[in-house]
Length: 504
Image 1 (cartoon, rainbow, N blue to C red):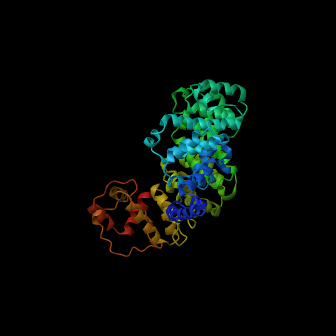
Image 2: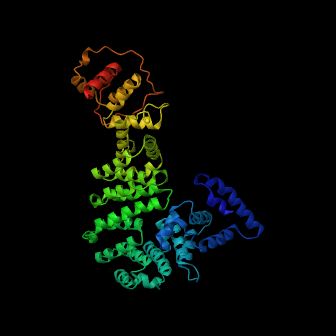
Image 3: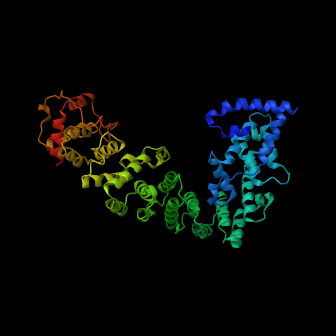
């Protein structure tokens, strides 16, 4: 019955819990035992159950890391088991003591990870004061960490006890294990974790471990390691760090497109976010990564879309731009349009929330600008502007051209195709998101005196179903209400004339 609660969505959990609790009451009555006793038996059963490691975490190798990654996946079996336990704990009177008792029990046969599960839940549901009433919080945390490591030691076949691990010098233990087991990637990952968790000051050991981890294709793990050691002064002098960054990032990007990961974009953005805050950012060879990805073909343009994302996020590089430009040039108009649509679908997706730290405006991203430049160059505006009804592509194209001040070609294309009202609308949008000074300066270049301009009372209906909404002014000065009203009364036909003459 608790399986129903485990599978319930968070918003529905309270609705499920009440009838479920009534079912438990009835079961207790049928078997003539107290409800508290039934819940305690269920708690013991669930705490002793084997850890359910999610299959997709297998690349992490070590059980402790797979366990924590499984908890992060709310749909995993371990997350369901955790929800069952938390539910029961909410209905018994001595939750803290029972979790501590289970974790510290001398009963044989209880795995280290199962004990770790009890303590992970303890720190999630109990306050420090509640824990401190029974044991020192710091001691419990040390024991929790030791349990995770003992689970890993057992997995790799290295004998170790709780007492030995808690009492030993971690740098000495890490070096001794390296001597005997440096050929095993699982053990190397274990040693690396120890160096980071216990601040082992041994740059030479780190420098010898990372190539082993890269050779084992643990690219995402290595990116995380590099992110941590970049903030540790004792490792700042490792000369090979830039090379390690390049190998890890490029290797992971290729791994993403080869493993058919459904969450490839979110995973890529997470790694690029780490790159952005790295002190070695400027040493990361974005050109090689973009070129490597742009040369590959796959379903749904995944390698090329990933190349575009790398180009958009990492610092600008002309060689990267040239690599993408060459790939775009080789596309026909329809294929390029499909790519733009895919890039725009990402810009509209929830994935952008993950990328918020990257400070990229995906609507005017570099890769989109390149694609729209090509549309202008080839004159294929039917693809992005002249195809009714108004679409996401049209909105993005117009916004990009206005933001990049590259609207002239599109306006000229509208005029050449007899879309005069659309041209008027585009130019009106262009000036509506800019300072009054821009229109004044353009009028001066076009030799038009704005003071003598009659007010416009005419119809401004465009060829599109609606005006392209550009939102708030983009990078403009503050404009007084009076000045904005005066500019708004200038006829669109004159704005078009000023725009064409001043931008010619």
